[in-house]
Amino acid sequence: MENTTLRAFKYRLRPTKAQEAQLTETLILCQRLYNGMLEERRGAYRKAGKSLTAYDQMKSLPEVKAALPEYASVNAQVLQDVAKRLDKSFKGFFRRIKAGQKAGYPRFKGRDRYDSFTYPQPSQNSVTADGKHIYLPKIGNVRIRLHRPFAGKIKTLAVKREGAEWYAVLTCEVQKAKLLPPTGSTVGIDLGVNHLVITSDGEFVDNPRFLRSARKRLRVAQRSLCRKKRGSKRRKKAKAAVAKLHLKVRRQRDDLHHKVARKLVQQHDLIAHEELNITGLARTRMANSVLDAGWAGLLDKLASKAEEAGRQLIGVDPRYTSQDCHQCGHREKHSLSVREFTCKGCGAVLNRDINAALNILARALPSVGNVDQRVMRSPRSPVLQGGE
Ligand SMILES: [Zn+2]
Image (cartoon, rainbow, N blue to C red; front, side, top):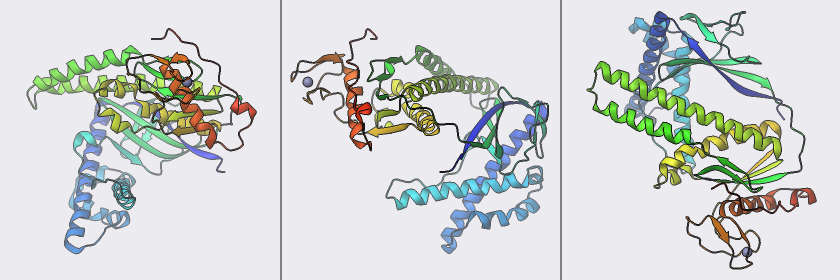
């Protein structure tokens, strides 16, 4: 087993006005190059049935620079990375086609869609000794806020624009975290709308209102944006306000997900969750709340933390988890508005979401090898909680 892993460390940058202009210019040039290379690939294929590789396109970079002198202001490796990015999206496209999945041909990217560039082989001394600046070739020393230390060998350095803010993302090769000691506990989690998570132990994690209230503010900001004249100064300002709100919501949600995932991983050896088809669900009328809950984001964080700690994370088929009685298996359709699950088969009465979480856990257990008594212990009998 590999004992190193990649970890991303993200820091806020405080560029000067001049540096910010350079960063923006770099993004624009990279975006144009990306679209140009995409055009080139399409053309080569259409005209000659020939597929260009990232290597072919990197080889032609000197010609690009000769024809367009402004590209001299961008680091050569950053430009090479643009070719690699395009290559990656083509590879993903072909892989999906091969797997028989729906796949969209790689698309041209608008300015707003192209928000980062990468130094693929940065210096290990990119961050100055006093930790106050980071050296970005062709840009210079940019002020950085190192709110926590990074560790390991720096593999790549990306510069990212989020709203009006700039960030540096250092991807580092680090030693794998120590595995957590076994706790002998297993848990099933049901993902909800009113509650983010309901566990088979009867614990409820609230889906905080701040997300909903922020979304309301976002709607107002978006409406105001729509009323502004295109290209006007006020529109630009309104646009920045919307981006800032988006960023805030994302950050708050990320924080919550990290916290919830950390706790689950610390407490349980095995965590069972329902396999989600997020896009399918998000299209229903619950869309807003579902997006708020951001289940996919939580599961992502759970997956990486579980892997680091040596915990098992198992996704199970979610069908009927809210209709089956976890005690006797009797299946009955309940109206979604009924919070309490009353089984006509065995008379069990319990909270609907806890019942679902127990079913999810039960479905995961048979798929685990070497199930011993400890794992099979019957879950604490859940009591109805006043959470809702
Ligand atoms: Zn029953």
